[in-house]
Length: 337
Image (cartoon, rainbow, N blue to C red; front, side, top):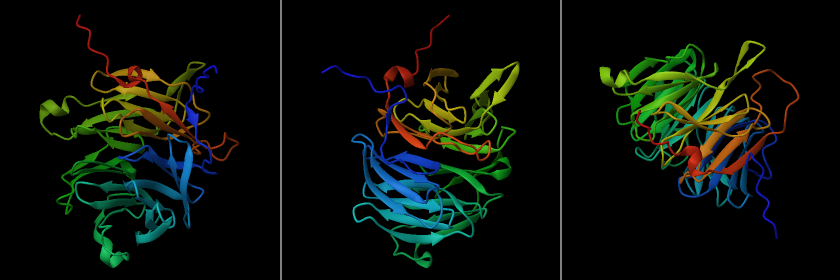
């Protein structure tokens, strides 16, 4: 039997969501993949086997999801709810609520808490071990300068990016006030923030084809290392066409990172050496979300129109899982002059 290589974008998962994909995430323990969508669903896939393992329906579009462990996860929705999902029994319960759509969710293994960010301009921390019911699970509510757009965690550090280009950095052990209050170094709206796996800083992307590389340490030497670069752009008839950068995902082994944009491209970057390592062939429509598997062998790509040009005919929403070759993600050794 002759071996037919998989198509360039990777293997397409069957039973994809029927509307925009808001996020997808690999488990820290397996090749299970959790996917949230505007079709009001959260889907659990076994990405290696290409099997849909479970589906949860919500009262409104689901804007984000994350794993707790391989048996349970969390989701947040435009219906203002924060939910816990138990995969084995296909059961869910409402942990609590915000006053407006909930945009993002992260589970902190360091603190044993769930963190949610909402368009009600607050961050909430929850203890999912408490019995259900907001009075028993809510640990604290923390006012933010604007609507929360993106969250990221590394160890005890939490980075919160909001509308109005604000960035707050917290220590989860003392949430009473931010450790640092910053402004994005990019001029346009923030799309995504992701902490470096080594805990020294974060990458932040904007709607204007740009990514900023930032550092937590406030010393002059550390701040001198920060920079920003242009990406997800093209020149046409002498004009620069600029696309939003929707997604950033760090490779768990090498610390390099992938970005996904509304141009349908996924690029892989070596942030330390300021180089692009790889560009994957173009996806059918905008790249809405990205996630590497726990060992970095797989990359999940959500090819899903993000309505940056309004309602128009577009390719169906789909999830591609591609095998990652070391050459695409491993930093190249520096060549001495």
